[in-house]
Amino acid sequence: MDISVRNIRKEFDRYPALHDVSLDIRSGELIALLGPSGSGKTTLLRLIAGLEFPTSGQIFFGPEDASAKSVQERNVGFVFQHYALFKHMTIADNIGFGLSVRPKATRPPAAEIRRRASELLELIQLPGLEKRFPRQLSGGQRQRVALARALAIEPRVLLLDEPFGALDAKVRKDLRRWLRELHDETGHTTVFVTHDQEEALELADRVVVMSQGRIEQVGSADDIYDRPATPFVFSFIGESSAVPVTVSEGRVLFDGRPLDIDASGTPNGEARLFARPHDLQFVESAEGAISGEVSVVRRAGPVRMIEIEAGAAKTRVEIELAAEDAVHLSGTVHVRPKRWKLFPAA
Image 1 (cartoon, rainbow, N blue to C red):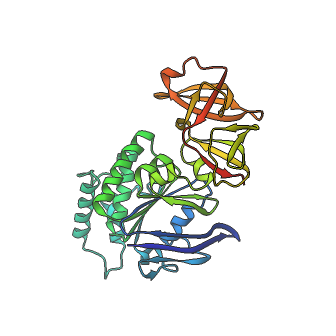
Image 2: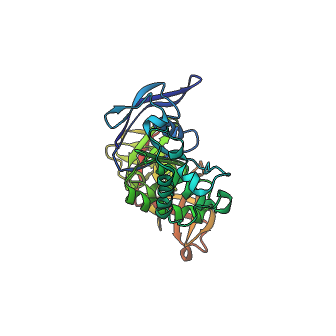
Image 3: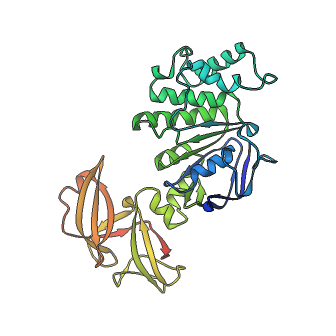
């Protein structure tokens, strides 16, 4: 099922939560809506679901304008962060709930609902748990059941709102892998909301990065990480340093000194130089480099993160080194980016 969001604006008490948002989602695609709190990602998901309605703009499911249709009319499956399972119902009854409350004319027989629940328990790798209650399952198992309940109604679209946010890191990582495999097996058009960058980059076919009610960039994990389109995307995705510089006739100046960086095609004026910690290297000479004092050296798994305070403004710059190479690092050092991106100052 293709989904097309066209020029959507959503206001709450005249406060705009989404500004003229447009997005095309291909049938069978797994899309992540990624952004900080307040970016509008959950509002967009709820608009697609039919839990909210747009102030202006349209939402199409295939060729059909679904903008004013209810959740039931859109036939979407929705999974919340906190499971939302019925505590007094068995696992089988939870999974079959959406089918059992259909109007009598479209409601399957009870035996068919039980069969569907058993099939879905096999699919989510929890066979034989039909008669248990939610309190008897782990958090990860309960979230799988919530997903099975969403799949039971055979939805056209599957929507997930921070589905693993309430789980610990190890369980979350395991479920991410499982969800990707399940998606590949079922082929549902799936949209999920997350603030976890790693989750979005690992799971999604494409990532939609949002900020302040607008879409900043849409692309693959490689596009988003390696070719960020805006300063926000560069700073939000992964670790990065932003150094205030001046561009003058194709040269980049930091603290009045030229850096060994080609700025051809970048307009003259104030700018910010972005670089990731692993794209910065130490060099012997201050010529063409950023110089600063080592302020922090900390261990981060197999590497050490070194922070320096550069220039008169003591701009924080972070560099990544193999752990064994940074044990005794101190004093004044010089660094140069191997990869970078320049953005005009706002």
